[in-house]
Picture: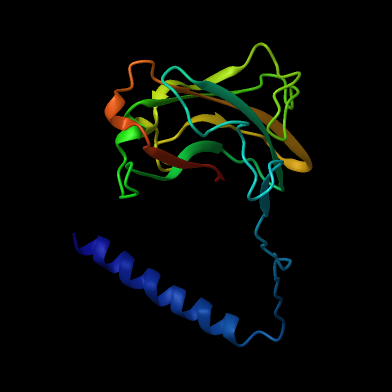
Length: 198
């Protein structure tokens, strides 16, 4: 054990001498890595149905079994790959007296699909020329059961980049259940469909 202790002591002493000589040296050198700049990406989502306009041609005085379809072209412009999803936000309704009620959301069904070929026709509410081989997102889902957040949403559209801009046509179809009871006459249901990209 004693020779090992001596060896360690000598080693430390020798190291001290070496450092002292290096400190007294007349030459030195430095190196700095090139400056690195970080910047954030950007993204923009737009739809071709103007604010205040309706996606569907008719949504008033609906009778049980009524149905309607509308299309919207969503455009992504950005510098990064994103995951774009659609969901129902701001779901509300009223009863026949105008009081808050979401009863009709339990009878109003929605199907949402996405064109499998990019734009695929349609847009500006019209579905003329829409792709016949769409990708289903929601099928005959009650408005009351549709996801209301991005985290719970389905149907990811994942463009690798939006430079140049890329588009996708979505088709939305509603149906008022044929068995909707007469007690819901004069009721309303409202929904805002929202697309988010992350």
